[in-house]
Length: 130
Image (cartoon, rainbow, N blue to C red; front, side, top):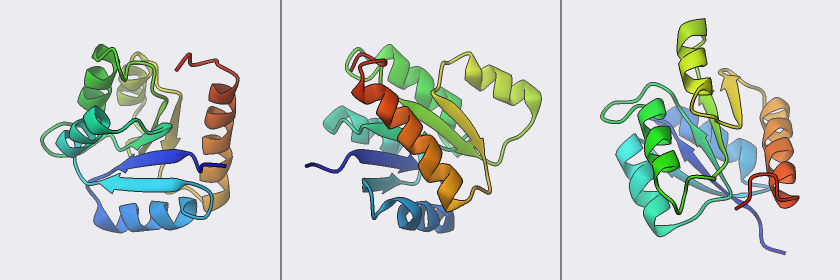
């Protein structure tokens, strides 16, 4: 059986390494360090889930999610924000874009895996319609 794929988008290279280590036993993990690379990646590939940082240079997380939602081929991709941004106003702006979750860093391996499994399990039953 094929491992599900996760794209991790974060401008912090150390965080990318940590998240990859958390996920690599259970999932295929691709990493990019900015929003532009994320968009380029999803044009060529269709990950099963995207973990997206909020604050990044060039394209921030909300901008990336807006682009994802506007593209027919990617509009239903499950996206979870994984970010240090914890201000209520910014969280509420992100939630208007309908991500499948919002996790505040730091996060434990167990908590991250649990949330990822919840989202991917929902998708297996057709809830996201991909």
